[in-house]
Image 1 (cartoon, rainbow, N blue to C red):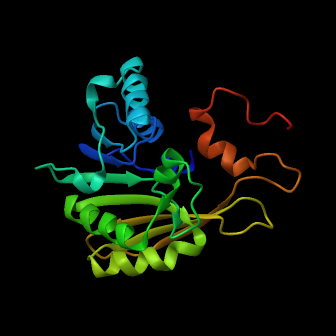
Image 2 (cartoon, helix red, strand yellow):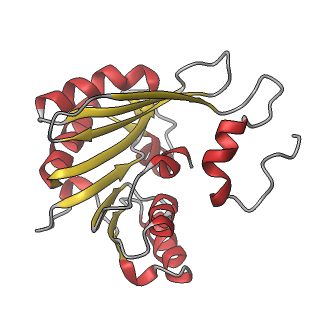
Image 3 (tube, rainbow, N blue to C red):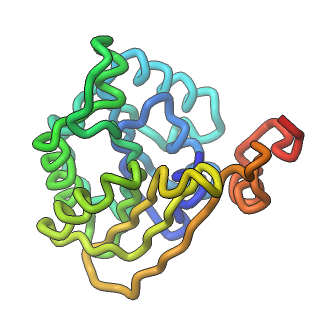
Length: 214
């Protein structure tokens, strides 16, 4: 939800969703830019089928194509001016033993490097690459990105609460150098309710009233 809320798709023509899951991010960017053409890649077949179903039920289904395959095997002649991903977030972490969960949440360092290399190849010269990862993995990703001529242009540190800092970070890359924009967002206050900043950012994507007490 956070990543999709921060993605600026206003000037994009063609986008790539890497690890699309059930299609939440694709639907969010299409809500903001209904003319956008999206290629959505998802390795887990059941999730890919649900993604295709969700897009078909939406107003923008004709604008998106779902590819049920590993991104590292994905081929396209296109260059994209918008790429976004919520990748597997446990790098070399202890796996659960459940294949579908491990595919969605775990990745080796070697595969993560291949993921960044291929993403850079698909990004056009004026494009943007948005990714959300655990805060403690930011330096690792920044190192790989720098080796592949991806320049950090925006960083948003996400705090789960005022005490649980840097639980996630959203990084935005480009292929040309720009002044770095930095900001932060706290999701919940200490009483467990959503902060006004989070509500303002995401409310148009929710059906329920975020101001209700938990």
